[in-house]
Length: 138
Image (cartoon, rainbow, N blue to C red; front, side, top):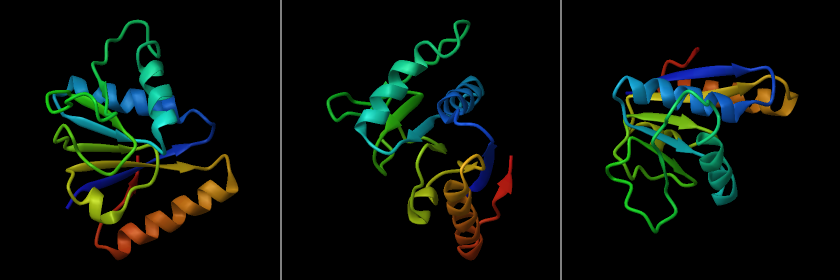
């Protein structure tokens, strides 16, 4: 059963947090999967990852169906599949509880700057608990 961590966002800066978390786990030797809403957001995040921190190099791949991602340490995807056999899932968009069960560590976001998004995060938090997970704020 994975460890589920919620990251509290008080401002719209999720892309920066996606990159920081991916970089942290890449440097520790973990494989990372980042799931986002759609292919447009995946392409945008892919471009942002090359410039987000001038002193950092975060090797990653965009899972667009035309590239084999098996050997990539960090993969950006717009679907619920794990092409690089990652053990860390960073959810730029919510994923099903069935999908997150395949990871050791899962990050979700509590976007408190928006009342609707904050309530959706509370609903997910309760859902994780009802499925036996023990989510915690990170």
